View 1 (cartoon, one colour):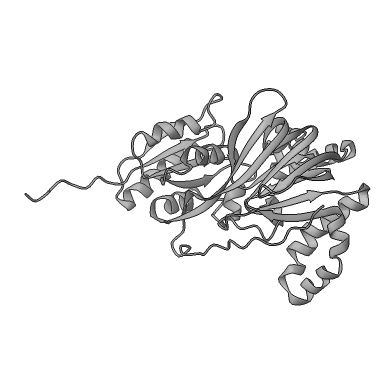
View 2: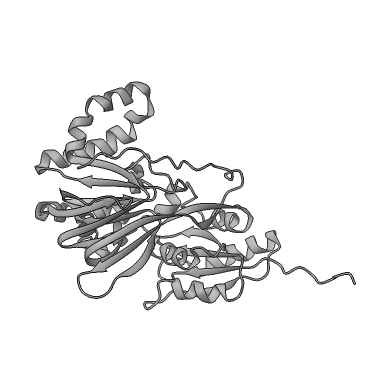
Length: 345
């Protein structure tokens, strides 16, 4: 007997932060995009104070949806990605927050809801890595979270904790400059022990450690320009500045050297001539995983969200664990899994 059953139409769900998006505009845009794609009627789930998006996404998955659109800031996107990890269900991104870090790194549109929903319904699937952080808090048991762009220990997390929410609403990501200005004068180096790839622990002293799945920050700052979102590797920066000159050296490296000089052969030769000075204040490492134990508990953040003080953290790459909807023509990029030699701080 011939099976004449009608194939089930594809269906999306939207997990949205009502404090970040214009719901009426978003619904109108989604309705148009789903109609043009011939998909079934989209399901809608709102985040709440108690649920940043993980539970809403799990509820969406119970309906066997094809794609989940995360509409909101970095926190909403991270929460939805956490629930989608390893499911094979794709993530569509409708960026609406301050940083929109993953969207920036993937070169997705930032200012158009219609462009974002069109990609979610009519784009292609691309697997990317997730960062996975297992953190042991100052008090309590270990917990696991994912991150999409960057994790920070020490000064970086203190800066985010000191950023005023009301200023973020007024000036966006520039508010972090104010947070940095109020954090750096109080920053004191701390002792750590770390190991890469399960190798022997090494001691170091740092003001901050950043672990990146991809390396572009707001303001088009190429903090870790070698970081790729699909290479199965984490890129790590250990910041060890001494005084104002040290911070100025780091700022020059991430703005002038990474953002300008790296674009030309002459510029790259100029960078090589200053490598010894750079390495004294900012050491870069690459590994599939890193374990860090701190002498005294330090502030910790994931993708701009505070996670309190931790005593230790294990961070690793989960290759291809998330499927993201991308514009047509961006499929087929390869993965670079080469692990470069790390410099010990």
